[in-house]
Image 1: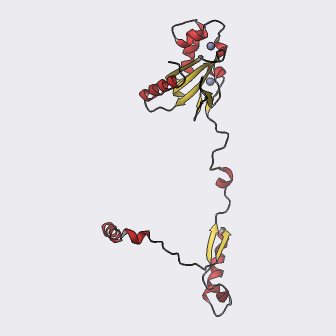
Image 2 (image 1 turned 135 degrees about the vertical axis):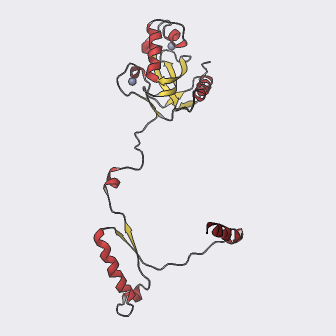
Length: 219
Ligand SMILES: [Zn+2]
Ligand SMILES: [Zn+2]
């Protein structure tokens, strides 16, 4: 049966299908009412009235059967659920609880790229507990050159514990430790935000980290 129908459609030339088809004019009177179970009575009223042309003059006024359509009445779902996301959904890194990392989280969805007129925009919503991310540590003391890009498969806050430990123990074996242990610097100058998350593979994440390093000139 399906093959037959497919065969039939292949027989119709393309030109015929492209021709504009005029719609047949419809004079049926639309009656739109909000649905209610008790309204079935309307169907019973409309039929005899329209099917008995000589008994009722309505047939002359409305020669065709009225087009009865129901409007969906308000329901709990319509009243409670909004189909659009609320505008308060924002992008950036947000504090979820009062962990140590939350104190340093920079909640912004745009970062200026130093020495350019460009702005980098963060598209998604992240928390200090987000994992599989590329993040950015910014030094508030240095106007330029105080940016460090990193990536981690762990939660951001676990990775930040590591960075904080380096700074607190004055370990200069990492770029972050070195920067925040330098003159006039302290942990208080540090801010962190997630640039991007949800990578499919570790490789994809590392590539993205590298691209950010190029973009922010931190290589
Ligand atoms: Zn936190
Ligand atoms: Zn600095």
